Image (tube, rainbow, N blue to C red; front, side):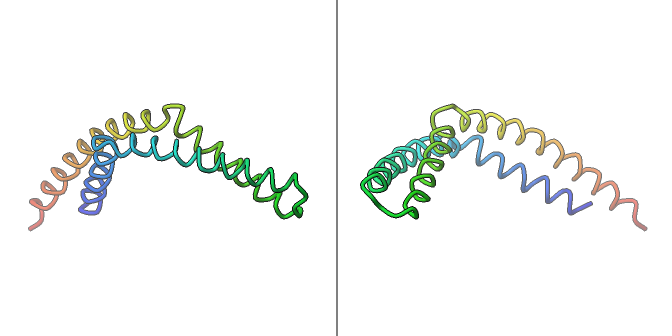
Length: 113
């Protein structure tokens, strides 16, 4: 039972850090910067490929395109803000579970002879 108590405590602390400290909002800004960087890298690698580079350069073109699309979705759609709100709700849920499991652990421990 003590394992569950500690598990719920750790999860609630992680959720609080993500939900209440602005980490998720900072991640959105970082994703926007990453989007711009990889978009530029995509354009440059596409120009190099079009100018007659090897077929291996096409792999880099597609890699930079995919990374920039993923970063753009994470940074510009509000997913990080929604994740912050979800983390706050999870924090409350796991704090309640932590308290309940702690009380059950203490009750179970008091029944021991």
